[in-house]
Image (cartoon, rainbow, N blue to C red; front, side):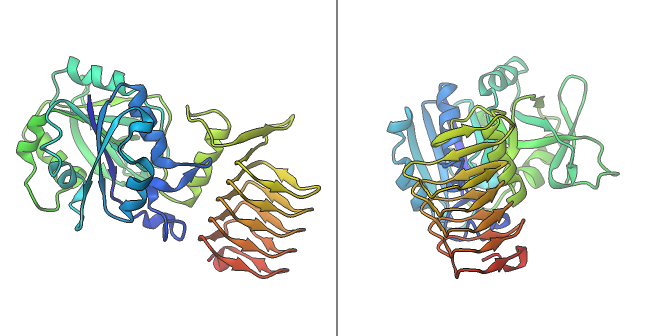
Amino acid sequence: MKAMIMAAGVGSRLMPLTKDTPKPMVPMTNRPLMENIVELLGRHHFKEVIANLHHQGESISGYFDDGHDFGLKLLYSPEEVLLGTAGGVKKCEWFLDETFVVISGDALTDMDLSELLAQHRKRGALATIALKEVENVEQFGVVLTAEDGRISRFQEKPGREEALSHQANTGIYVFEPEIFKYIPAAQFYDFGCQLFPQLVEMGAPFYAVSTQDYWCDVGNIETYRQANVDVLQGRVAMKPGGIVLEDKGKSRVLLGEDVELGDEVNFLGHVVIGRGCRIGSGTVIKDTVIWEQSEIGPASVLKDCTIGRQCKIGSGTIVHPGTVMGSACKVTGNSILGPSEGL
């Protein structure tokens, strides 16, 4: 079976973390976010996969190479100029010559893709969208369906009081190759704003399947940190990179390879420490994600924050909740950082 991973996005809502890192390569419990998607496709017997690339695409292709180490064949479709969701898929028409799945490279999910395919084929659909019920509809495109699952209408990021549905479009689709008849070539074209309304208007066999499986749109810093917590708590089938330490309560700490801890380091809540980090003695870290090869000086306090790779935080520094530091930042000792000072 064949699939396409959408991996060309810039990830602006995760800035400054994505300044030097494409969103699909952002660490999720010490493994690239897209690695979860590649492994998910492998578990459901997809053997041939293509990914579109744009923002720092060489770091994606350099990591995954030809996909051999992940048990599949992985090709790439570079986009010098972004073509939109549907336009990017259209460019890969030469490859997607059978029933295929499109999935975002920057989401976290353990969705049963085999069941999604089965429902698509059972209904004789041209296109099928996987839906997930959400509470905060303002951040998503929501979908209305008839009793038989046929899609009747879309609402793009409606207000809470205006929303006619809480079923969000997950960005996971199944298509028949005939879909390419409705996507113009060599131009920007979008699934949600252009192709999907066209399919509804023409009465195409266009269906939705609601899932109870885990799915998280890692769209901002808050959802990024929550997704890390969800992995640590076992809410999603993803293996973290490192050793998970648990206390008698609900706290969990993930230590990547070659982490050095000083004496009397105190972890609280859910903490992710990346590979090669050095944590100084007497430091307190609560509900925080720290990327690889960062150094935290002794007697520092970090709470509810996100620290990029290769950062250096001097001793005695206090980092307040909500702070986000991009990679390679340096902070002198005895500093106080709040969200507005995030670098």
